Length: 328
Length: 99
Image: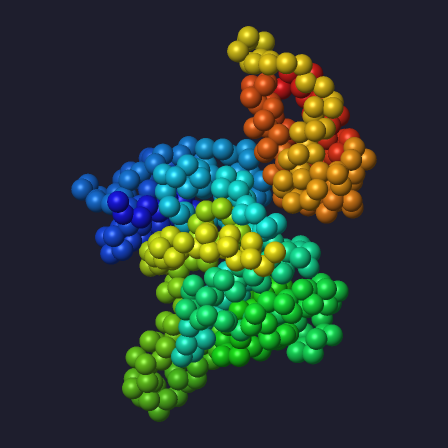
């Protein structure tokens, strides 16, 4: 029996067209069975006759990108809710959605439940590091207001996820702050620091400049600063890329040089493209939920399904339960 | 009201509702039930945020829905529930109103 992934076909800026296309590619290339959850009249025409490995699961409602997370309570027949229920009921091994992040988190939390010892979910975001495996940022934005204990739980789960994702036995764990010294930071950082000292691999505070550098493997923080940092990194990458390409186009001589270097530059730039990584895993819920970015295209959705499949194969939920229980 | 909208098993009183809320809230917040009293403030005494209250509401709707079909709690009303006592009173009111 192939691994089954429930895909929210209505979630994302380019849904359902790009999502359905990505799901079809995933079923074809990854050998998974995809349950496409969404409005039948919208999805049906996008599924070519004879498509194998993809089945339609009808929903009658859609959670819009601007809806509040609590809308999953009132829109009980929404595609994102049904996808989470398919995982809860054992009809799918994992779900993936490029829709409303807050609603994805709420649907996963309310339908799948939390794992014991994880008070709040956290998003594990792979951050590209040139020449090596990505860093893991946790929390990338699931839980904005945090207690120190919740951040400690994020650290435990993020560390375990990095061990799976990066294949490192003892990843270096850093607390994102505004200085490396232990006393640096606001009240939350100062309260979290001593709670992390007993976690193997804890190297102390790290700073924003440690993103994308081989100085730390797991960067832990609350969901607010994590999301701000993530968007800052994304903006800086785009700005830098634009600077490089604009410079290469600025004179005829540089344009000539660009012809030689552009293929290698484009290949390098692709390693920084979020579409190549796929989605981010929601840690702390009792099921696998992959959250893709809202502007996901077919490639991003295919890679999100790939990420979901990898999590199923790696028994991520069981590994999280074990790590949280062992850490007390 | 159609007969099938009421699946009464036994009368439910404020003490039953309090016990139910205390049990569910203790599970959600992973704290001892003893910490939860009628006068406990969700935010200041129990550190229960809006997501925790939504989890509580879902659990109550599931459990009480088995007794009174269609029992529901309006999300808009959550902002008025500050203490456990507020929640017990609210649930009793909704039950007596038949929804």
